[in-house]
Image (spheres, rainbow, N blue to C red):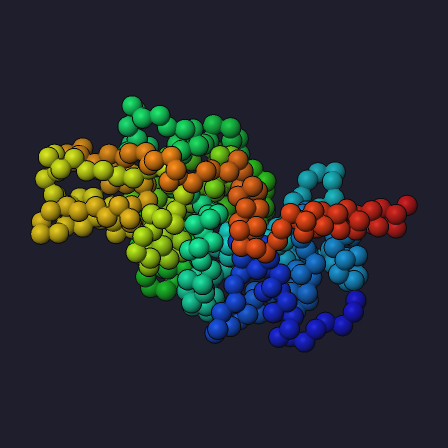
Length: 383
């Protein structure tokens, strides 16, 4: 293997590499993003991570690209996957494959079992920089669907706007602890809402279970968790696609996304949500039950009159489901103000990548071509 760059340049190179992934990894004036990488990655790991792409590849392909000895590459890739620094897929009778993991949603969430005070402090400093409202508005990774009890049966509700119906085509379910609530607890802040509240489906399930990050559960348990989310006052945020890969159940005091959204005067303008709450002025007795339920501070009492700031309402329905007078209802926004939901999280991720101007179609095509070339080189080498 060629000699490694000096330590500072190596981690800067990794930061740039991560920033070219859909979720981004922006630079800060304090350099906290570099300190985080130094804590998570050894020098060799940082070097090897820069050779991984958004395409699953074998250790042989990655070894060829990185110039690192195959035996060392294979051992390191497995170790890095165990540490939640990259993503791996293991299938019977097939070679193991590895791909780059973006920082959020990805590497950060994979640290759920290895949080310590130092990492928590650094992430608390870095999270506000990860969320750029102008990028999120164009291509959010997550969206909002309402809690079941808040939906009026007379409305036409799409299947991808209902949490329980999103589960219909899913067979394997894994629940993991919420890293946001764990992080806040370690900081002496946060809340007492359920910890085991992150749900995943499909390809990531084996990875989560194999690395001890989550546990497999039956569909009925997922439905119970979703219903408990309403009782606990948690916002349902699935991945931004009609075919979802995960669901987060979030609170305004812990969730990195909601906490950051709450710092902006008009959160409703930044989220992907088809609904907004309306109040029946005649029926409301201004009891204020809904105020504590709202996770974006969209409801308040003004001169003992309940006021709703529609620029802050994200249409989660938590206020609707517990209104004792049934005077709060969700209404569909005008079509031209509703973000189009992509087909899959892959489509959403590519859209984010393009909107952030970190890659264009030609560069994406080149990425695939180069991967195919490297695979062909490995094939010819092994003939």
